[in-house]
Image (cartoon, rainbow, N blue to C red; front, side, top):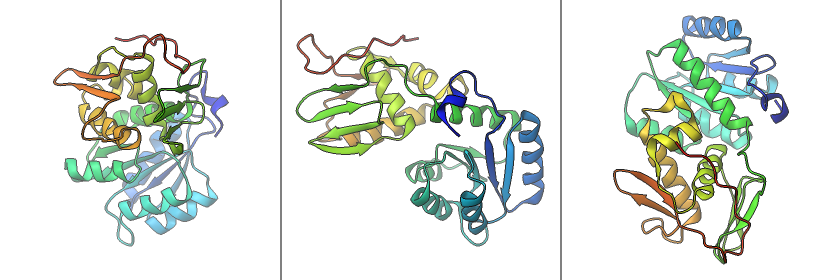
Length: 256
């Protein structure tokens, strides 16, 4: 699915969702609700089947259950990430933050606990697709922070000590909002609304986790950050950029 088809308003028509779960009843429910919304739906009952459907159906998003008989969701996700950057929403019966972090670390884009609200899942699907297909609203795509760090938002990558490192779509959007508001404090709620969407207003752990991911990619010492600074109990800010900065400053983004 190309970006152009999603820039105006996210239209489910033409978007394929792959549902991977060993429970036929749940697959049926999800298929019905997704098709009502206009999505095309492919199904798989196992991790092995999911990998086959990844090649055949070319899904735009995958809903992936963690607990499956032949290959668990984490293993399937590892295999998927070797082949594709397709967004993945994981489903699990365990409401354990360690499981959530494990899934996100392996490349999942979101994580929901069973039982879940179908309308909530549909909102999450739209939010993940929106983050994946829409680029950050910036006119100047590349900037040099200093001799250690440069950022290319067009390519979704950072250059750290001359080495290019790819950013996930969500990481790129988070970094964009931090950098374009350099020197200003952005609260957890502001970042959640701007980067993830209003559907995630209570998911503070997403901000903390992705800040950690970014620091691991751009900081000289992630334990003692110099670029992404924490205002304890309030939020985060990117270090201030002055007028003599060598890079192209991005237009300041709006903040809640």
